Structures are given as C-alpha cells and as structure tokens.
Image (tube, rainbow, N blue to C red; front, side, top):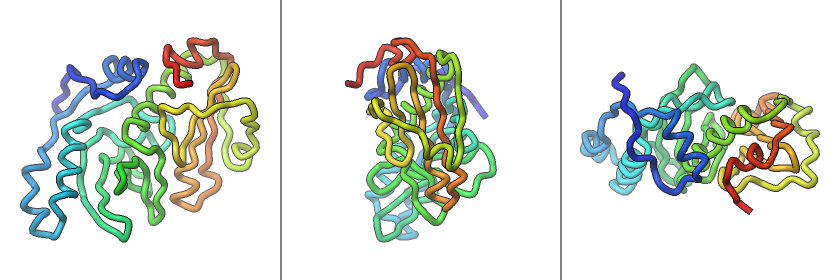
Length: 220
C-alpha cells in the first residue's frame, strides 16, 4: 500500500478537524471509479449513481484516518465500491472494514454515512459529520481528565439535561453532546442495525475546560 501525505484537506470542515486530518491522516492510492464506469453501466447501474461515487472518491478517496473508538475502528480508508439499490435509491460502500464486522459501511441515497446489516443505521447526515466525529473523539480523549464507558441499559440512563448537541458532527443515530465540563458520545449504530441493545455505547469525557470542550470551535 502506497502512502502519501495529505496536501489538500477537504473544505467544509472545522479548524479542529482540518488540523486532525492534516496531522494524523494519510492518503493511499485507489483505483479510479471511472475505470469501472462501463462495467457498472452494463449491469444497469445508472450514470447518476456512478457520478455520486466519482464525486465521493474525488473528495475523500484514499483518506486513511486513525481508528474510530467504535465499529472496530470504522473503514480502513474511504473509497467507494459495490453500488446497490433498494426502494430508497442507490447506495455504495464507503470503504472496506478494518476488521471482520457483521455490517458494511455505506453512503446512503441522501449522502448519509452509516452501517448496513439488513437494517440501515445512518450514523451521520454527511461524510463530513463522520470525519468531524473522529476528530472530536481524538480531541476529547486527549484533554479529558476521565473517560467513562457505559453500555446497554447503563448508556440509556445518562441524564443530558443542560447538554446541547454538537452540531458539526451532524449526528443521526450517533450523537455528541456538550455539557458544562464534559462531552458525551452516544453510539447507537450497532444497537439499531443489528437489533442488539447491548451494542449501545456511551463515552463520557469529563473534566474538560473551555479548550477541551470546543477545541477552538464555536458551533453555538
């Protein structure tokens, strides 16, 4: 696998996440989508679906980031493959898994990033949201005085009174919440996609100062 330094971080990301991608991300070589266009067209994949894959690859293709704290690290690197359709529209794979997991990482018909295992769990409304969540997890774990992990019913019992959603992660099934001195990440994707309530996980990053809470990002 050929690795390259990132010289052009995608726009539309917060400063915290741009710094994270620049410092901790690399690019790997990927095969251009256009090389498979005719093969897919011959198998009734519409040109519009292939265009979406090509645009995704142009923006994100080959991006390899540190592992996510959930989903066995997430995709090894971002790159589209395996277009498929259902009644909602066309989907494609967001990137290959790092480890053997019973679901695929997918980009939904409306651009959501999520996992699919018979059931669809859209984790974030956009790919940007997924990348923002990785950067925030890295930042929060580095600055927190304590990190507490809760699973299953224990995760359901968290009181988020006085907390506000962290908007830049564009959370859907997975969400981040900011309180007076802590950040809480709620990971519900496996619980939803696998009908597995014990897969629900909360990570509480506590003892954070203003820098730890925001990392220079103001999303209010």
